[in-house]
Length: 467
Image (tube, rainbow, N blue to C red; front, side, top):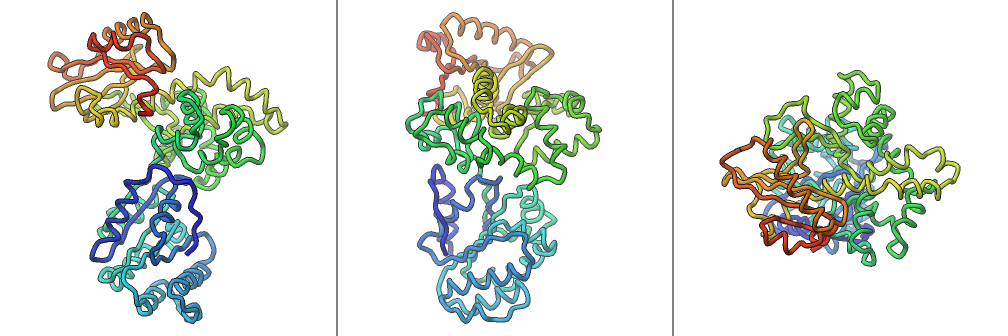
């Protein structure tokens, strides 16, 4: 089996999980899924290196063609070309034959893009249920099912109504790389340029690898995102066409969100879509992980209070800067577009910075840098008041309140922000009168950090996310 192994970063936990499953005494059916470009194939390539393994990538060809290709892959692992000449009529017979020919101990069979098989034949989950129950579950096979269609993997493979339900012995949803690992892609970038890169690429390995670590951030933006023909120039439109049936409507929604619409009503007004249709489209985008729906933390969930925002940094950047400047970019006016982006980019990064801090509060707590281990993290708003990040621990109970500023703050500025934060908290009703309260600030840099910390404030700077 030959798989190209690209730069491999921050997947130690996932590799340990796979090695533990490989080392078990019995058969294993492991499901690995996650959005496109997240590094599923690279993870498996690293894991199977040096092990007997069949790797098969499904696509939209006729099922018979796929069956014959898997037969050929199995023949390579068996080191017996006569297996490739066997007449097999279906998947079950192919697996029966392979298991009959296999004379080794543990063998790995990887079926990549398993949802493509399901799209071609909706009975595939039932077919593989029979294969597992009748032939594999008492063997030494490690069957790995990979998929980029998160919704299909969760319903057709992992869901309660799936024929495969209850058969899996392990599952792992692969997530984007954490921010601190961007240093391994761009060792010469300072912390500010790392945030800038995260703001347009996120933690998706395939995107990070497209940037040249030897050139500046803005040169990479010009050459790798804004230039016609480049992978990142067309990737958003490719994903829309590949994942969705009506890409123009989803484009309109993402454009509205990138322009600042956040409530359901604002998105409806910006797109002109009927509310019943819009609700369905928003659910699909949320399922893909491209957008998220936020509710005020510490309150009962009320659908009408939910706010939407783009969760995927690449999609947010593309719809804010590429989609809206497409006419100029098609004419090759890259430099003028770069200048427009430079004037606005700190505004975009303010939203990215805030979301990144909320995500990293869990890691900061695990390092013992917070007063308690939060059970929930989010943001809060009420009327004209808003708090960027709140971490709640209902066992104490305690609440940690943070403002997030993409700026280098003078001591006086930091004090004013913290005083205003303490005033806003009076409107936050969760466990009011019974909770312990802590107040903090997250910024690029904070002058007088030590003095403010000694007064009981919890302060974090950009460099803390890289520690």
